[in-house]
Length: 342
Image (cartoon, rainbow, N blue to C red; front, side, top):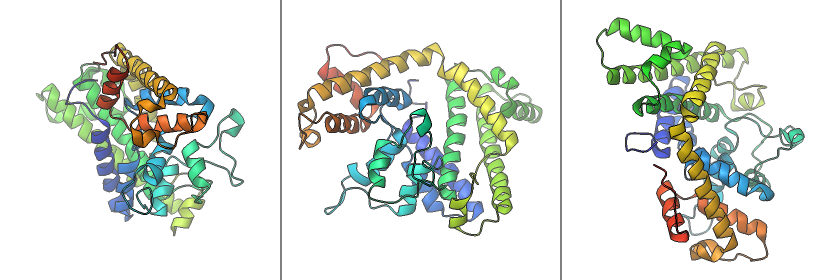
């Protein structure tokens, strides 16, 4: 949704990092690693978020598709050029491993991609980097990476909820039927009988975040104790994630996600600009693959006109690095008409 008071990819990322530190600290984990993973987890996101990602993934269908998590790894290992002698950001193995698989293992022990039976495979960027560096894709990631992933969930849910309320697409009354928010709202009303709507919203979000963090801390400690974890190797060898919500909160979180999907993400006021954004990104991809010379010189250098795969991947890298505003300005440069996404 438009406006300076709604979340952007940057503000979301800062919130994920703050939550990740808040969880890592009392567990005695590496706060710097948890924060680094939180800050880097969305570097590969396209303009217009998941709408842009869907458009690029569809456009790259014949060329191994597009995945923003894999693109984050590509950004920090190849696309960033800050050093004189090598590409990438010179990050530690633990950081790269956590970026690649913070949502869990990607292969079985034989190296076969999970989901291969359903036509899935390793994302291009992870497969390409994995040919150079063994990221142990069959194993679970570090606790810090798992915490970054659950922190992303907490921030995403709570702040989409807040943005929906701010935009008037959701109301406080809608949340009285949600398990995760109903009890908290009742407690707030009992404690502050005449609180205005804005303060009620802020107090609700604050308490939901605090409650989710407390639940993750308690559940993670329980799982670590039950698994008799004594080292990072024990974490990676575990047969299940060690950081996460309790079963009760997991159920409430799934219900909240369904509520947000039905009432916010699929709202007409959201879907219209989403569809326009998908079309805009598809337009850019088609135009730039047809005429790579329309890209800046640094991006078209060394391209072989006959190599469709490399051209498509280069165009995807270029588009994925755009901000929303830059994507719109590029579309205006290349086309007579550009959709109004407001």
